[in-house]
Length: 357
Image 1 (cartoon, rainbow, N blue to C red):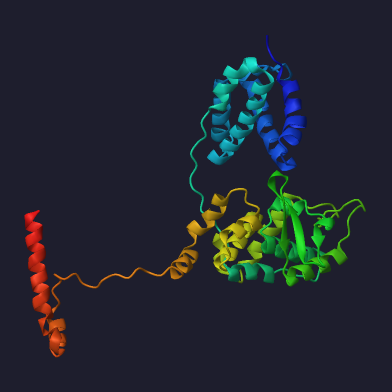
Image 2 (cartoon, rainbow, N blue to C red):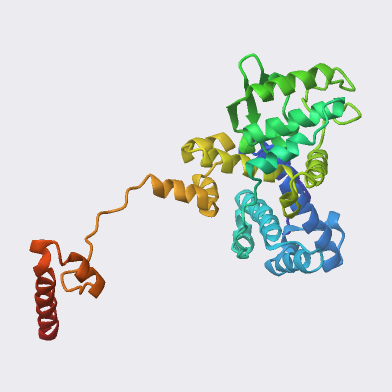
């Protein structure tokens, strides 16, 4: 007996992920893209129509071939390869639950190892570099007002690009200077806003012209439609290039939304804020994610060291012989004339103990 893959896929994406697991729309889409790539690869590898594929066709060997294909032919990184594997593992865990007779086959796929990835260096902007980016925004146009509000909100809150894209007018409480962000895993968090951020948002919203009255997203593109993540990436990249004239050091730091998020994290930590609060501020599910910022910042490490008093330690051991100049300097100190003799006795005693062991 064979098991068609199509009905299981439909239940996996339409009910299991969004309803039972409660995954966000972005997570569902990411998993969908990974499975879609797999289904495009398998028919070519097996010379079989995708509509006729069965679960039994997708073996461990086929999946390993697919993972090699996306790395070698499509140029995917090990991180991307691991993300695709995570989607496949999740699908086959669901299949095993729905069809216990397939446990052995699914277990072989679910135990495919992840590839070790290189530790990424977290890159961020210094305060003067971030200020240079904000300074090149021309607020004499509707687009400029939008971009200033977008930059200030992102820098103020450390929001992800997806959180900015999904931000609605009802998420803003400008009278209370705060915003609600909808993060990964459908987790919401509130962040306070600088007065400058509130003023920029108010100025932009007055000039905001949506294509339809049903559009509730805060940030819109030139057509009055909700801006996309690619649109935000384009905006940040554009101003990053412009800011290079004012701050040449930015040339080595191509600007993108996530680099602004890293910048927020580093500046919050450098200001002496508790790491647990910074973790909540950024919406990190795991505190270890926030610890990565401390690992790479020497300035933060120095501040931590300055707050920790050094232990008191003795000066020289009793057998230490002072230099001739020090001896001459101490010669006029009266009772200290016998220091060298005492130290010599201490050194001899130490040598005797050492020889006896």
